[in-house]
Length: 597
Image (cartoon, rainbow, N blue to C red; front, side, top):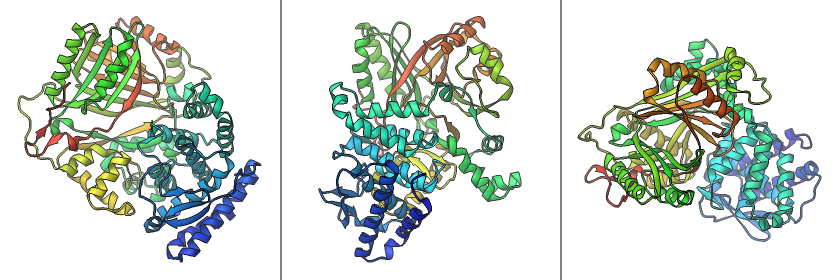
């Protein structure tokens, strides 16, 4: 960072590692000195003066919660920091105290007391400041992980924490300087009144700026350019699978030092977030994954019906969208007992007779595929070319991979398998999202994870025991063949991007013909495939059905003698699916009472 003496500031911050053994007054003195150091450096960096004096940091009792005010509360002159922070493990304590002092130094640079929504953006600025000080490159850096998992609760200003974290991911991945984000935020604050008069969301406006600075259409669609050494690493992940893909095992296999392989693990996350995605074996749980598509007679029915569907606890997400003529509701994650899907089917049949729905499908998903395409050289296209031209231009350098294939039995058994679940195991299956490449860390539903470890009498400050709890139930889930992990690479794209859906009737294609078509479609970074009894669905992220590339793909499919149907969907909501609350432990079966449809 040009205007800040990184070495000197890092030395000052390192004192925080010893705070746990200091007297209270020494702790307070060091924290306030560090806040002053940050503020002086920010004055030089921004060429601005604070609008009001910095608050003095004091220690006190603060409720343990998550969100923008994590571990602190403020008066007009003081910032009260929770004493329990000093019970955290040394590194975590160090990271969080670094964050708190950086954030408190930033606050006086803005003229007004921030709203919760504005403070969420200040959290992002504080993290960008620390990123530049510590020269952080990877999203998996433990400093980022410690902070990101604490400061965003499920909803901030009625906005999902995933939106806030996605902004942070994009800014870090694209290395946007703190000063640029700071000046944009300051400009927005100064025009806040005008924004409100125009009824524009403050966060939406900042997100638009983040998107413009970080994402191009090429980023979202074209194959990911990754160095050949990292492609070699990815190929080992796919060959070995989750269980064997440790740094030590891969180091022996490649005849490299473990440090070299660890550095490659980290490098893989400098540009793209790469992790092991959770895959749950629903059949072993007597659950079934259904696909929902509803075509509405009139657009006015879209929002109320989508809202009503989300009340069903077995529906995890809802997309809404349009084809050339109609509004559409779409969900690939309706995970339920068979009778619940039948109830929804009957309800949709009823409202179809009432003229609300013009067409619908509630179908068992038979197979799912997830393809990624990487490039061993940089992509030189300056704009999206027609599909056939892209095939010719990109084909020689592409590496095409199948990252995941899930196949279920084609029929539903007459009787459920005998199972015996306990509350903790189903809680684990509900909250687990995935695992990071360096295997000690999990991705979870943050708020629900807190409930999980507190229920198991584990302190919020005991991170080691929290991880051990997850690991124990991971092993239990594996013993019952309930869980697996598949590799996933997240390309940089806008939150809730457009998703192009291409439907092809199963009657159109033999298996050989289908594979040939799929091979052609796999010139884009991501291709998802879902097979139902009567159709194949293909998902392409980042474009709509009216996009020129989509039109070019459609023409290619028609020329192949196929009958494609194209439409666009966009994620409206993903919600927590509470398996542990949906199970009757006395009867050892899934609850259906009270599930109207």
